[in-house]
Amino acid sequence: MNNAVIHLDSVSKIYGKEEAEVRALDSVSISIERGDFVAIIGASGSGKSTMMNIIGCLDGATEGTYHLDGIDTGTLDEYQLAQIRNRKIGFVFQNFNLIPRTRAVDNVSMPLAYAGVHRKERRERALEVLDSVGLAARADHKPSQLSGGQQQRVAIARALVTNPVLLLADEPTGALDTKSSHEILDLFESLHANGRTIVMITHESDVAARANRVVRFQDGHIIEDHRLRDVNAHPLATAVPL
Ligand SMILES: Nc1ncnc2c1ncn2[C@@H]1O[C@H](COP(=O)(O)OP(=O)(O)OP(=O)(O)O)[C@@H](O)[C@H]1O
Ligand SMILES: [Mg+2]
Image (cartoon, rainbow, N blue to C red; front, side):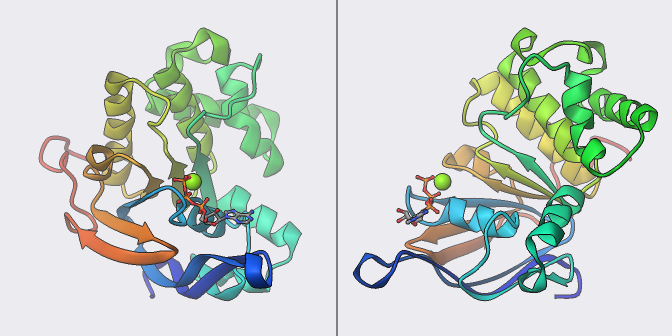
């Protein structure tokens, strides 16, 4: 587990009590290596969002241990968990979750404000990351003035601005048309090519096929763990000199 960004050891998540008890995750163990691009798939109710909430330190396990980047998250209090979320994880959601009526650059710089970075540096870094997702020219646009694909790229820029060890995406292409979906997946691929660790939840098998490893959940269990490519392999490897 030395090079693991994520390490779950017999993690269970139990909702409710006695007869109403639901084991949303049932003794799940998995390691995800630094630099990997992993898709999590499974039917509705199989435990994907529960898994995302635990990996994202949004919710704690009922049983078992979860190490994020070597840190035992079970030992942390609420404040420390909030710090970990801010510093180590970039979140991307299906519906972008941008702040309305707020310019792209200000949406992107928001996590840096929580991290205590000064205003000028916040703006510089936000502009840099917006540029890296191809949206330098849209920095002053508000979410309502951007297409869905552009809004998702702003959200990805916001997720990346703190330089997190992990990019955690829940159905990132779920609200997008085919063309925009491909653009977002191309962006994920190039982020992965640059060494970023990505965990992506998806319903769609063609989306999952863009990842290097596909983990399938059923009834709170991992029933399939399939590696499509090596951890650091990516389709762009030969096309883009880095
Ligand atoms: N807060 C909760 N209280 C009780 N049961 C819950 C709670 N959250 C989830 N569950 C149950 O846990 C199981 C796993 O739910 P989860 O949301 O992780 O599924 P999912 O794979 O994300 O599904 P979907 O694809 O529909 O989003 C389901 O049976 C669900 O009903
Ligand atoms: Mg879900």
